Length: 203
Image (tube, rainbow, N blue to C red):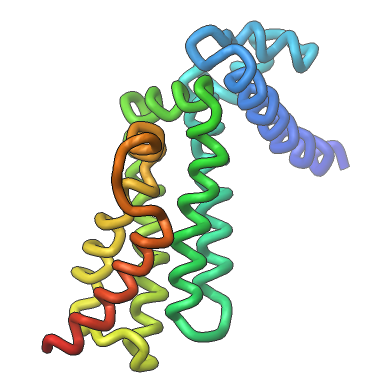
């Protein structure tokens, strides 16, 4: 029985550490937050925090992974839903943009955390981008199979569509381009959807 209890407690403690860390990263910034700060909020010793995460960087990776996983889960739900591919692709692209904007762009301190992730935890970011690209490709493939999208090279089309949306997906680019001239998110999605049809028409 004691083994079962510890198995339930330890994952819960890890989750609590990440929740508190994210809150502190938002409140005082990633660079200024220390493991001691996180431990104090949790009423535990820093040594106990280090039982679950061997460094502040590991905590940072965990927070970044959690935030990215939320976007991935929302994207996957849309991709797995039944129905025509075009409206689902529109919703998928718009949802990724909205969630990244809500999580990172309006919050300067969390934006700082994203910048650190790009430098220190690139593998986490890369894995996230690959999964998002695969999810977009899944919907494009569904549309091609049903005849909605006139595309033949689905991997290449997926890369092109994802690259076209990068200004609206990448947290740093969303922030940098917010006040610069350019298409709106809806105009860009219209462009991508038109391209999925025009490729077939041209071929």
